[in-house]
Structures are given as structure tokens and as C-alpha cells.
Image (cartoon, rainbow, N blue to C red; front, side, top):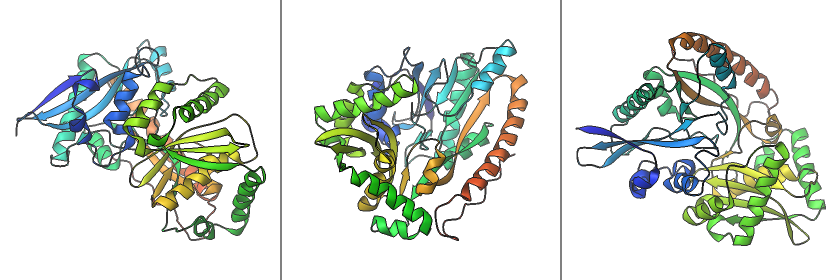
Length: 392
């Protein structure tokens, strides 16, 4: 079969149904609707330093068989895989680290499909062709490096087979072990931790705070205003720039509304906080949180316990509440490995970075082992998997 590659600087030149056919699992952060809304509402480009480059593979009939969402980056903001030290080392050596190329879903530290292939295509062949075209583009454009962030397992294998270096980190995820009710989950938790969770929930209830779950398509314009306001408050509090604007949320609320789950906290008939989540058929992804009034344990209730209840009530198997945060462990979110893959054009830096990644990976695994000692679950339940052996 004859295959040929294309490069697009906007997803608007790719038919929506063709792109989404490459994402049958409906990962929300790889959907056409999510990616195009970032473009059309000014969340990318010069303001944030993300410049789209979509790599497409077509067959001899012109059908799109594979694709990758990539971005030329002039900084490392919004990636959640931290390479600032690499950029500093390049600068000290008199080299330019930026621009670089990143394959990721912008501002979304969520594991998912990165080298998308059609279900009827030869996955290994198509992913290999995507990677080779991406690396050739980097060389032709004199980009310093290529970074694939949070790829799924089978995508990682393709990347490593093409010579990319694997980097490991951990997030904290909750898993549904056939629970029918929140109390079933608590029954798996040690007595002392169970009492703490119940006390945290009780403190919120004592404030007469109620909760409302609204899916994106059912959100009113007023509710989107509140949700975006809370989102901006969190970024303002941390001194960061919010990348996503109100128009972005309005648009994805309409175009992929069934995959957006907003949990509002209400007191005295006023919205006081919310968490904006995304979902597919099996996973809830916690993404954005904010509040206008602080109450004891309100963050835990809105961002964790309400999400766990949603997963149980809707039969979702996993809950990924976002990057970082050891405070998630006592609340049922266990250390889960995540990965990224890296290619550097400079031979001078390839071996030092490879050596660093080996040392870093060993340290991270040792740290994760210590984190497992904080597991809230009863002894013998849900033990960690043996760390993967890094490829040679």
C-alpha cells in the first residue's frame, strides 16, 4: 500500500470525521473538537507559545490513516514534563533549545493517544512512518528536539523503537474495583483513613454546602461564566496566566458536551466553587478547579470525593485528577507511572541526557515505593506493579 505524508498548520484543513476516526476511544484531549477549539479561540499561537503542526498520513485512496498533533514551542509552559534544566544546559553551551517540537495535547497532563492510527490500519507501520516524518521535519527546520508527552503504552513502544529516550514520572489515580456505592470504596480503606475521609465530608456537609453535577451541553451561559471565573481565580492565586478563555469552554460545552462534567458547590443559593472534568466511556479526568470562598475540606470534596461518586454512579473505571499532589494518596489515589519520550538533535547532549534519565528513573521509582507505604487501603489490597525495566 502506498502511503504519503502531509503537514498542516491548522486542524481546520483536516475533516473532523477523519481525525476523530483515529481516536475511537474518544479520548477527550485528542478529539478534533477539543483541539480545534484551542485554535479558534486564541488559546494557542504567540500568546502562549504553541504553534500547531499536524502530521497526517494518507493511503493511496486519499483516506487519512494516521495523525499526530504537534506544536512548535518557544517555551516549556503548559507541558507538565519539566525540561527547564535542559534548556539552561543548552544555553550555557551556547546552543538554542527553543524552538522545539512537542507532541501533546496542550495544557493537558493526561496519558492518551499521541500517534493516532485508524483502527483498520497497520498500527506499527503507521506509527513508525509518523515518527520518521516528525524527526525529519525537526532536522529540516533545525529544531533542537522532539518530545512526546504522556503517550499510551503501545505508542511508547513505537517511540523507543525509533530511538527516543523514555522518561518516567508518577501521577495519582483512583481505580474502581467494582464499587456500587461510596461506602463500598470506604470498606477497602483502613479504619483510621476511613474516619478521616468521613470527617472531611462531614465538615463540608456541616456548612450546608450542596453539589450539582452538570454536563457540558446542559451548562447555561451563566454557569459557564461562574466556571471560568473559578478557573481564572486559581491561576491568579498562583501567579500564572490562564490559557483557556470563556469562549473555549462555551464551544467545547456545545461540541463535546457529553464528555464535560462540571461539579458545582453551592451555599445559600450561590455558586462558591467548581471542578471542571472531562470523561470518556471508562475514565474521568479532573482538570480545573477554583473557588471564591474557602471552607475546610471543600477542595477534597469537590475535586476528589464528588468525582469518585460520579465514577461509581456512572460505571467509570478510573479517575485521573491531574498532575502532582501527594495529598491525593490518603484519599484513594495511588501512584501510577506516566511517561514521556525525547529525541535531541545535538549529539553532544544525547548521552548526558540518557544517563540523567536512568538516574532520575531509579530515584523516581524509589520515591514511588515510599509513597506506596502511605496507601490508605487495607494491607494486601492493590499493591504496586513491578516497575518496568527501561529499554536498552
